[in-house]
Image (cartoon, rainbow, N blue to C red):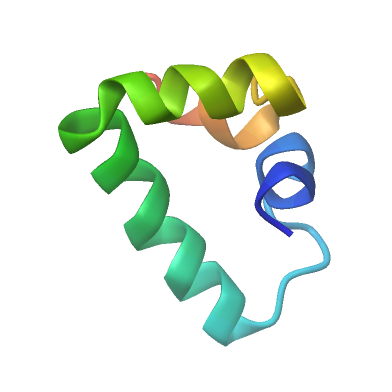
Length: 56
């Protein structure tokens, strides 16, 4: 779910999923940098969500 949400800017997400993604990704990017990098490498998390929010 996370990889698709990032790739499509959560286009198919429910409101609950959007809320989850909106919290977990900024948390990972700020507090768990190495884990975020591993997820990016494994799933190619450079999609629309990440590009739309480079400062998050």
